[in-house]
Image 1: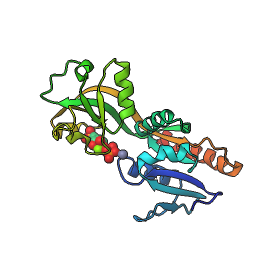
Image 2: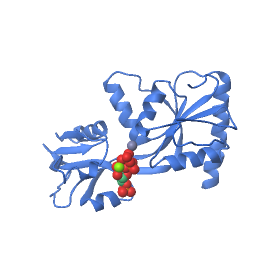
Image 3: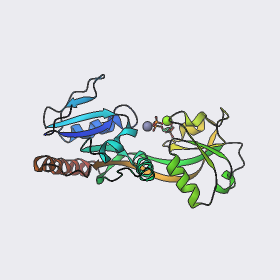
Length: 225
Ligand code: PRP
Ligand code: ZN
Ligand code: MG
């Protein structure tokens, strides 16, 4: 269990953001040891507990006030916010800082042989994505009617597998698209990483620890520039 007196911070357990999240926390003087099998790591230098979870779970944990802080990509954050708004569940959080890593874009891509003449070419097509709400919001705004097919992974193989005509997925270097014979067409969302806080009011000791950490974080980010 998490203790009420310790600050809880959720980070991605394994994936694109894990290494840099951990690196940043250590640079801020938060010392801890990670054990592969454990969900929680207790810091030895501050009353802070790190929770290592799937990145997709981080927005909800913060929005429900289950953890105090989270480090998460805006792509995952915005998708969760839209989903929870639609379901009329708590969807608010406080954005504390933009962090200087995890840059990527969410883009529409089609097989190289697809004759793409702009987003209108996606009318009545199937689009595989892990981000159906962001995708649908963009298409709606463009006046395009298409069907999204939700996949939590391997989105890039969906067209070849006959599951969809196009995809809407994260692109960083573009290597995944290229390896799968897909070409990037329209960027629908640009993302970086954010440090967010739950809107549940905190005891003063916890809030002042957060403020202290923010000072350190600002120092670390400034030193990188
Ligand atoms: C994203 C995306 C692609 C890859 C693109 O996955 O789904 O697989 O990154 O990167 P590239 O343009 O550099 O090839 P991510 O690492 O976020 O993992 P996930 O899909 O498991 O969330
Ligand atoms: Zn993910
Ligand atoms: Mg992927």
